[in-house]
Length: 308
Image (cartoon, rainbow, N blue to C red; front, side, top):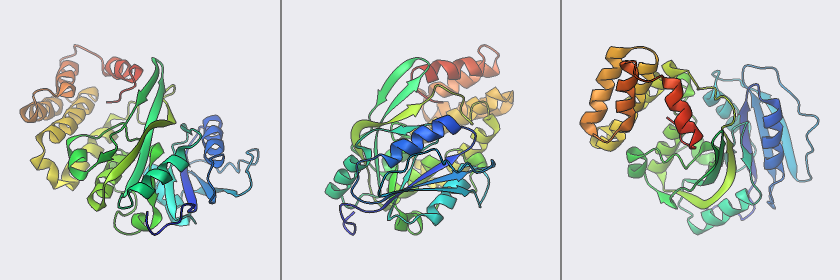
């Protein structure tokens, strides 16, 4: 972050659809960050009418703007609408049902000042699920090879902080060609890590709310298509058996949930061939054999603060 002052203007992009109460908490938490520079929150309404959020208190030195998604319907288009309209040097994301804790931005900027070649700065998270609270702490530094091997789910998109110039240049905008926008955060992490390391504040500074239904819950078609797309987009996965197995196992699970037994078995076999320890592949085989319902398995891992 060498070209920035210690108080750069930050634009926070919140793409939203149908969560008015949680949205207000997310917006208020971003506006109340202790940061000497300007904080601009852009709320992009996707496929719903714009709510002007007139009841939200906007402190001095803060800006709240509401927009309509003017690009591809979905999360990717919504985030890109915000990025292109943003005035800040830095871009942050927050999901409309998550909440930043006090000190989040300040801690990220201190970390970035210490590692100026970083392409993205994240933080740890605290997941609130039906099974309780779960703290997930990311590694202090992660590379492109690390992200091929693992999604590193502790690095959540609601913690992302990037340079706007990189999103308009070396990294690029959020990929709107991704089916159902599924995996857009992983795709962005991979592209960012090609440019420079991804560093994190190893503290839980964002609350992730899983006490609700995800827009992706049960949308297995989009999950299978999105992850298959990523395997094609990044040919480097071919040299990363563990990473390939992980994604193949997820695709197998999605096909099994859709009742596509042949496709599920083919993807599961490919996953196990690359990594015999890939549990998602065995779960997909169990679903395909009607030994377990997919919703039950997803609920069990979500209660532990884990995802598919």
